[in-house]
Length: 548
Image (cartoon, rainbow, N blue to C red; front, side, top):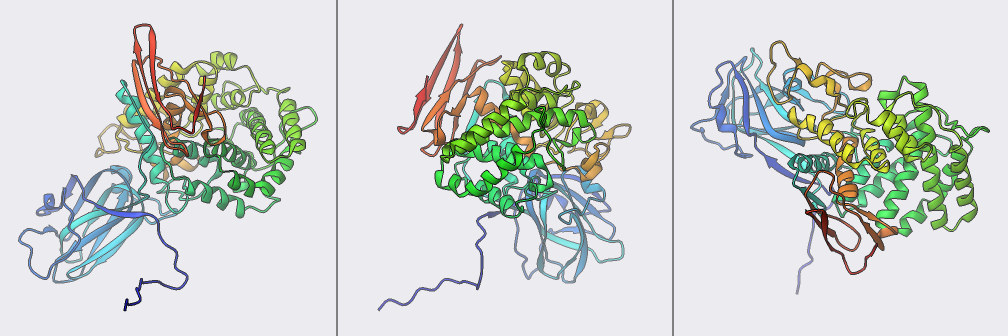
């Protein structure tokens, strides 16, 4: 007779679908105060204390400290093991940069510094944040600490990178992967904007994040969960995340997600909120055709104090939103609302407010089809191309340049702007960045250099000031999606990739290959320049037809 099988369960429990892996430190950045055997902690995982005397523990005496480098930005916590026969204390400081670990980090949204009690013959865990560097200090009035092991506990979703991108330009390849990894780390309980700060679901941030996820991963459950999270917590008479533009982004995200995955039942479940929001946005068009979106009027922090640039950009964003609404209303069999959305977008296109030389405003007018792409590209985008952009809206600048037929110029911006972060030690892309910061600065992986500025702590404005600046922000991953869509050239031509457009381009390249996930399996593309000809090889799942 078979016994009843038992599996442990708790009332009301919810499973955690993330995995945890132990990661050892790889570099000793600094040690002070007669620390002994610090190198013992490197490149090894030791997660259990032992009731015996270890022959060579790492010993941090009173007043001593270590600064460890895990080699790459991680999300998770720190695990410390001690074999000391007495309790002591250890001050732990997380840092996305060396300077942050040496300083006093912000406690916004997650603690990044704490004085821990280290038990006798025991283990202690601390943190739920993003970090690469950890400083360990023993207070001068406390006993020495004997460590048998220190490791990071990395917490992430164990997703396969189905999409990939590889070309003869290694800088672009690194940027593609870094963008994918940046967004991947931000996929925790929901899709966060940043895993150090804010650790929140911001609707505008979600757009480049979703586009990146669709270019790399098959799993889309977290996209639906995050879109629904914002929807369900926003009253009908309020804007999402309190910003009218972020309600626009919800509609555009929904449209692009449906185009890529074709989940009609999910789209149908959004019908009530979608139609109510479209009707509300249609009321935000002034009689003269100008956008009249209400507060909070926000594009990007870089335009927060420029009302003219915001108005010019919001004109394009609202037109783009109503184009998306037109398409979704037709899919949901509501031709009357579709006609109203199309008419609203047409009215918005009768007005093109001056951009004042602002690249972000110009990009939104190009993407909203409010102004002539070639003119704005020539007059605004090509002037100091990698300046006057941000890691968030830089993605839309890239899209706008591609729409204007200037793909080569867009790739140069990727190399110069996102590539400069790699040059200064980045392993994930940042909340904000300006090329001017690099002129006399040291990298995030270096100790302070006399006479030079700290690229993390000495710059920033608005919400990016000093060490509050996040160095792993999902909205900065846009180049990953851009390279897959515009260089590898794979985009859906019908919802769910029932049909696909495959139009690779090689501006300045001789080879590109890669894959993009679809509901039927990946589309694989390989392209090579042979003399003056382009040789393309495409491997399509049987359910997908290529539009030529």
